[in-house]
Image (tube, rainbow, N blue to C red):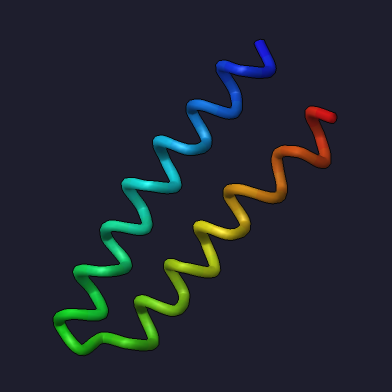
Length: 51
C-alpha cells in the first residue's frame, strides 16, 4: 500500500509540474509559482499522515 501511495503521488506531481511549465511559458509566472508550491505540498504532506 505504501508503494501504491508513493507512485500515485509521483504521477500526480509530474502531471501538475507539467502544467506549471506550460503556465511559465505563457508568462503567467505567479500562477506557475503557485502550482509548483502545490506540487511540493502534494509531495510532502501525505507522508506526515502515512508514515
